Amino acid sequence: MFLGTYEHTVDEKGRLSVPSRFRDILAEKHLPEKLIITQGLDTCLFGYPLDEWQAFEKKIMSRPLTRSDDRYFVRRLLAGAVECSLDKQGRIMLPAGLRQFADLKREAVIVGVSTRFEIWSPERWAEYLARGKSLEDIAEQLQD
Image (cartoon, rainbow, N blue to C red):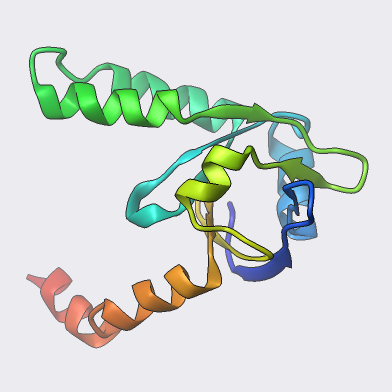
């Protein structure tokens, strides 16, 4: 399970170090050499271990082809997806198109979200947190 928030740098070649805790999880429970990175929601990137991606892909592919929003959603996620391998230093190569989509420059925030992790530009992550409701307000709504 991916948990926590980490700050890392993107080098001049577009490589991003995966947090060591996440690498440990990949080595223990998944195929450590394979990750799928794709465009995510809220202008971040989603990172999935290969087995979690396959389960997610199966779920989204079950959406009806007759609904245009479903087709668009599936196309956007799959068209933007790339298979990444961890190098010996625990880095992944983020293609320029994905870096541009997420507005990643030199810095990145990596957020664990259970079965996946997200990669954010620090500015977009701060904006996302600032526009959200308080945890107390959300907790009250969840109670109903």
